[in-house]
Image (cartoon, rainbow, N blue to C red):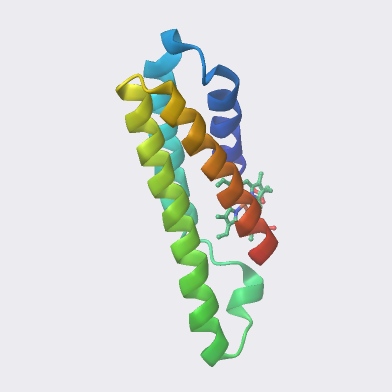
Length: 106
Ligand code: HEM
């Protein structure tokens, strides 16, 4: 997740700099790929739950990671079409997804 964080930080810093939209789009694509890979890293706490609860929590963890990866893909697309207003909104939604994910699982 440090790799996700690093990309979001750079994107946030340059999100209004339209000259960097190409680079931001590439970073957002990387963010989405890393997030998709992170989905496989089920938190230990979830793994240690009784089987019945484990499936429910695992599904929630995976769907929240999927949501974040999808927001990353949409973010890349917004930069590619030079819609920086949309990019700013998607960035906000990603920060909320992070906050929600950490409140639930960290
Ligand atoms: C969307 C952007 C997100 C960013 C930038 C982010 C970033 C981070 C960072 C920097 C850490 C601490 C360092 C590390 O353990 O690698 C962390 C830990 C963690 N995050 Fe996220 N996160 C995000 C989303 C999520 C989501 C959606 C979930 C859950 C569905 C989640 C669950 C966790 C958990 C469980 C830990 C603790 C890992 C451990 O201690 O081994 N994160 N995250």
